[in-house]
Image (tube, rainbow, N blue to C red; front, side):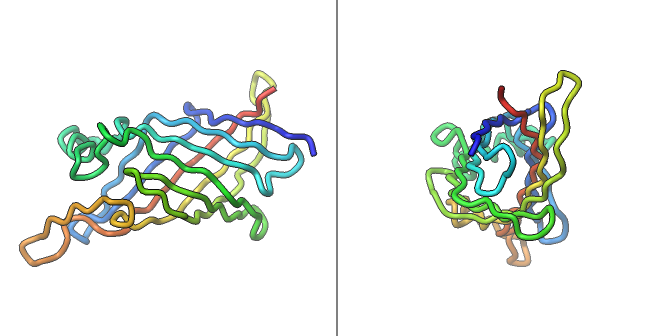
Length: 177
């Protein structure tokens, strides 16, 4: 097996999340600073090792007051837990271009297994001749399982923010020579 190393190209990748607000609409945010990579068999991404790190201080919902609150101890506690980490333990083709990606997510000092869906977008060489591969990744996590326990209620008794967080990532990896 020829081992191939890949690194995430942050210029051509994005990591976003969505969460319900007042149970009537979703708030979308992103992490603007992240890094990661993968190790695979050159001819097959099956069982690739994948790792990722998000900079919590780079959270961006287009509202600076909300972003500061999200970085606070009420939510991510960025001062004490500056990174969100992911380490895969399983990457397996399900059907066609669809894969299951499972691994350990560490958020706010809590590590739990998660499973994500990944769709292979293709492989192409860029203008410099470097090989690139793309994946679109989606999944959901329970925010309370990771210590994000902010529980403000509305006047009617419902939660201001939802329990489930939808994760969305478009990732482009560049083969390392």
